[in-house]
Image (cartoon, rainbow, N blue to C red; front, side, top):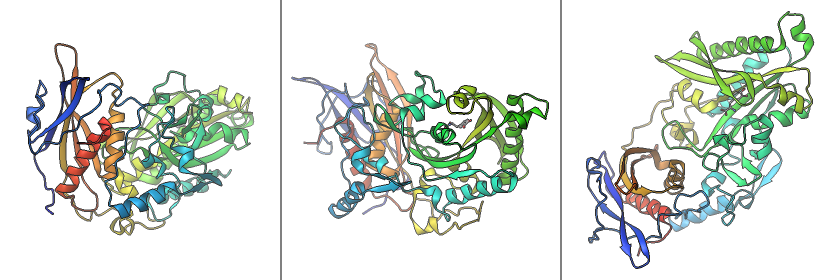
Length: 460
Ligand code: DAH
């Protein structure tokens, strides 16, 4: 089988054609380069090489209530093995989780795909030889060496949390975009896969902790590119101060907490990145006031390292700590590990390829990753009319559901609205394996399957 080299992208036009049942959409596949993304999607022409996929109306596609059919592209044997993994029970922090607890095919309030369930329990941050585990341990070392009062460390809390813990308890407004089904994985209307480790702040305060670090996998519906993946890892830090601590300094509690926060996080950044230039940027988080972002000047650009701030008094009051102040911060481990270890693509963190895993060992922060080889990308363009429930995150979910980690990037490259007000989008989908060259056959199958997933029916 020929391998796919750098090639001119092929384009798929999902073309509207009239049928007795009303408007149907069918793809015509041609090898037209993107430059020809037609301002007027071409008429359906079925040639011997075209794949006829008769579809339902586009209305309803991409709505978050809609379930996408994930068509197996695996051989029978590996499909069986894969489904066995998916139906297995995982245990996180003493909580047993089955696939049925997380993925509910027929529940319209559930938008968790199998591919996301498959990541629960993998806990990359708990592997001492993994870049994320190495980074976590290095931050632990910093806190152990720089604070007299030791921080309680949690890295095994269950990622299934209530909407209340994930949003309400940390004062995320009811209309905040992060609450939408487009951004968050809902198990049902009351339960989500945590989208940030801040989801544990309130419960840990109620349990009496006043200095703590929480590390965990977090889940967000997102775009596809080298730095975004629907599962990633965060660390949350939290420190409560009693009035005695700030009173003798002569400044108010909020200023005291802000000063302590900035001093310690600057020291943490130096511990990880060396003697770098830093700056503080004022920002907004629902749970802190004031709120800041720390940026460092690294490899010739400003890079955001973390978000932080002085905890909103209402959070402390509601969780048994009236009269105290606190600071909190949250950082994304992948983002930092990518620059510290020179890891060019976020998908690599999930690789079990020995050529990746063997390059890292416990305690070795910042060993530079040596790419084992650069495999060629393959581009496919797809254009279609969009309708109201369409979102890019939903498209990305379909593509990931079919192509998994072979999907490297989905980018909007052209859009056009006709006189009737109908809008067509053209996306370029880049496929590339981190581990091997893809074959033409494989990529063509992927392309066919995500089209089927999008339109929810099988080819004739
Ligand atoms: N939860 C935030 C996020 O996911 C990160 C964060 C920012 C955490 C500020 C904090 C904080 O505790 O104070 O983007």
